[in-house]
Length: 324
Ligand code: PEP
Ligand code: MG
Image (cartoon, rainbow, N blue to C red; front, side, top):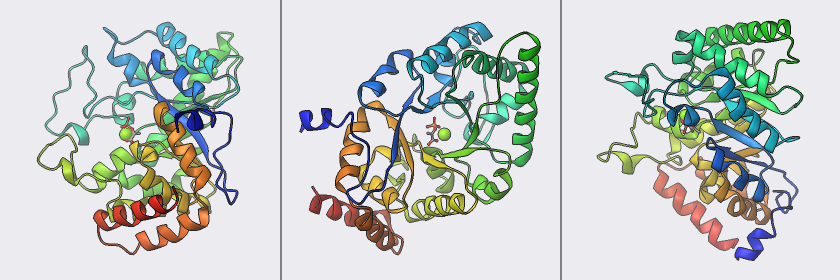
């Protein structure tokens, strides 16, 4: 099986009945960049920029950040690279910045933090734009968005950064901008977001946590955390359908993208792109290349009538075994 998976590197992720899925890698560490390429990633779907911030001793400078981002953009030249802006807060702490919040997952996190700390945000945006000089593959992704005015504020900052840099003699241009759909409130606002952004990426980890009001790091309740809880599955289906009607490209970049049972259901929604850790790419590609969308769609329709994740997992497991 191993050599069979290795041989898939050059093959596209396409179902036997012709549905194409783009497969991207999640990363955030320098050392973690090339495994994606080795396994045939078509780009980076999620670069978690907080990771270099977390292993630093203080906020990295514009030049330090530029070098890190440049390396990623260069390594994947000609392929899309989606750099997510700083997503600290929640469980992601910085050794040099103290958060003390009773409810950190509901507090100063993601874009809420960066918009309140403009110099940090501006430095990062400038570093990303400068890193992409002469390349054409930068995409910017915003975490924890839940309001229209957050996008308006970001778009102004981005415009400012472009103007500044051009005046300084750099050749930069506005890259495509997208948001993580991971706060439940963002779903109903998608029609308002549509004119302000170019794509979305479903953050199924946080979307599940916030929809189920469930902290998966809490051992008392973590066994209840499941991306296939019917309320989560139905919500993801709604997001994919909604985005289709408003013409926003959709990707999914949570752990769910690497769960074969979930991938069957996402295929049933005809999702166009998945992003996951590099080590899962071959497995998911193999599954997509053997699973007809027609079967996946029928499975999804059945799953959508089910009342618990236990039933949904049983159903999809049965389908997987039959198609092995
Ligand atoms: C997510 O929330 O699903 C996600 C991919 O982002 P992170 O795990 O970094 O919060
Ligand atoms: Mg998240």
